[in-house]
Image (cartoon, rainbow, N blue to C red; front, side):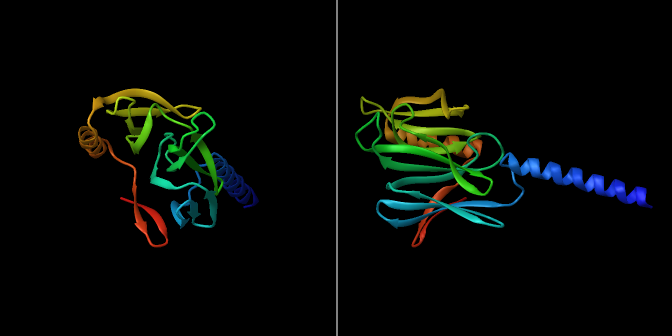
Length: 196
């Protein structure tokens, strides 16, 4: 009998170690939800809520877009926040993309980029890839696909180039329907929450 109890204890210890490693890699079993709470026109709070805790990240910039999707391919959704701000390399205010991740129950930046290729108009996650509408220098628009690399988004391909905004939006919406999609935002009086 003591031998059987020892085997059960060893087995339970192994399960606990596996679950601990699973959570250490950022893949905790608990459910998570990202939402955005607007404080005023230029101040927002990104909120991460799990089964057992919540964490917040203050964003001191206007938000033009908020989506949730698995952009880095690890099976866990990230928060993609489009903010309007200037950067060191681009002093003019423009649309930027920040990507945040759940790291052990805390909101942590995964990528806070200055720019993708051109000026970002809109973005989504489709089929595990970042897809962006970008305004070109000539007034036309591109629909670009980006794969996640260790640093952040890496250009993959043009889906559509030098098109009108209407053409790009039509392709953008069709591409999202055909490949699976991130969840977009609906505005609520108390903030923004991603919706299906």
